[in-house]
Image (cartoon, rainbow, N blue to C red; front, side):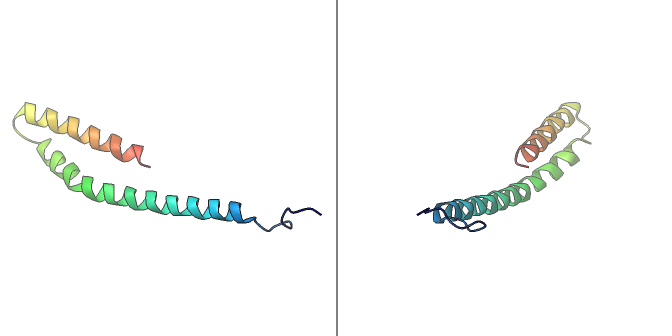
Amino acid sequence: MDDSPAPGILDLDTARSLDRSAGLMAEASLLQHDLRNILTPALLSADRLRAHDDPVVAQQAEIVIKAIIRVVDRVR
């Protein structure tokens, strides 16, 4: 007798694995959302500093903006 499930029916291990994967995807999505919420004010502040009269401040603001954008791109 064959112990494999009928076609179209998942075995218990596969179902648990899919459930864990779905949970991890949901957690990753929440983390991505939270990270963006944290970084948005920093990005807005750095954007305002980019227009600063002091060229050193403006240059450092540009570096911060690029770093924030890299972080956001990595969590996509």
